[in-house]
Length: 150
Image (cartoon, rainbow, N blue to C red; front, side):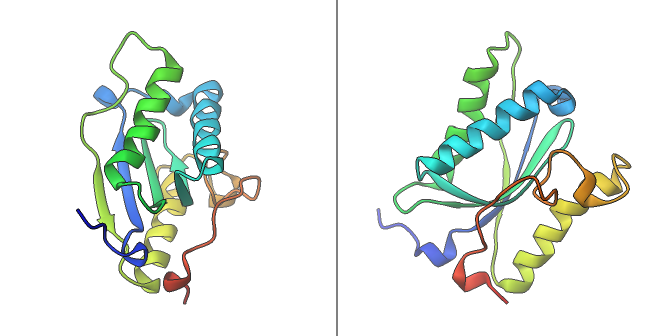
């Protein structure tokens, strides 16, 4: 099966912890998740353009590597984190939601939504102060794909 052109393969993704468990309320779990993302990025599995770890769910803007399906990229993330967490309880809801990013305005809108999420949830006053978001200058993410630059 022929894969869609790379410029059509950037997605806004939401995945939720099983039973809305507050997995990312602890620094250890959040650090473990971010370590996984960084290792997968270094392996060239996908690019992460924006993210936020909310207590019970994750939002990402992600571009799978050429030759990696979006389903496989999410398997790396969800399966990899579950394996590392070694929880006896279910870790993730079985599904995830995704929406293809269509143009620069769509990209900016979804990135802004991700960064504002902890502010809307009253977890911080300014997005850049939230510890587990790409809005925080402590984190490096991949630049937006060329075709999504305004």
